[in-house]
Length: 395
View (tube, rainbow, N blue to C red):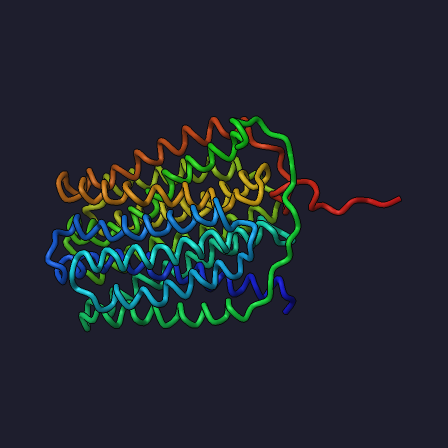
């Protein structure tokens, strides 16, 4: 295994750990609410805490450390995640739990920015980004099942989150001992710009803001939605949540296959958003029937799968060293308020109103994608960051 491959495997593991804790949060919110003595929608502020920590950390990478070793950024992030997970496992006081969530999110933000910074500088950035997002989805599939089984049968929150922390500690060790990445430079493809930032990058950042809010919100509230709308157990709701993340995993596999066939990320993005909107409508209209609700969640998850890597691919073509961390920062900003708003709507307005929030966010994403497609640079299969990465012919 060469150095680049070894580092990417470690990076995949780190982002899978982010998926693990994020996926586990959905089935755990009711337990956090009961243990801390707060309402369910208030417990949803733990998602906000995760996002605040993540945005703050990735913003630091954007402003100050995007040119430094992204392996070290990832290793520090994974170590912080592992240590802070103890707080989510053992603390009961509400404000202490919220601080622990911020700390876990900060570690996750460093990991998120670092892994995308590494991927953007590898030999095949589009494939590396697609693989990273598959790894995240794998973690997000396992997280709800792990937490759902532990909480349903044992009611041991400490076991659910300390287990995730132990896995994360192992990944952190792998990152500390991994080799440094290759460091090719970004391309300088011209693009329409607003100040120093290309319009395509701005548009993709805005779209990711809505997307992360929608993806995180649906992952956080699907368990509660299923329990209330279809009158099921916590474990059944957790399995539907896991099905949503599993569909996202397959959607990202499909995205990787499409990229390998040279499909245009802008086209993939549009089709994915339209499909996700259709899945949301099924969820809203038929969520009271378990089978229909599950089908709607699965369709939405599958179509959500290609959105993040497609946005990243389109933006990196016109980007620079700071672009990956900037996209992660702005995108994860959507998780600060949008999932909490969705939780409030779900509690106050009912299940259909709560799931309608995701459909509205899909409509906003579609509008941005249609405008941005006209500004996107031409497709270079396997090369998302500029023509300089392609080998030159010699006479």
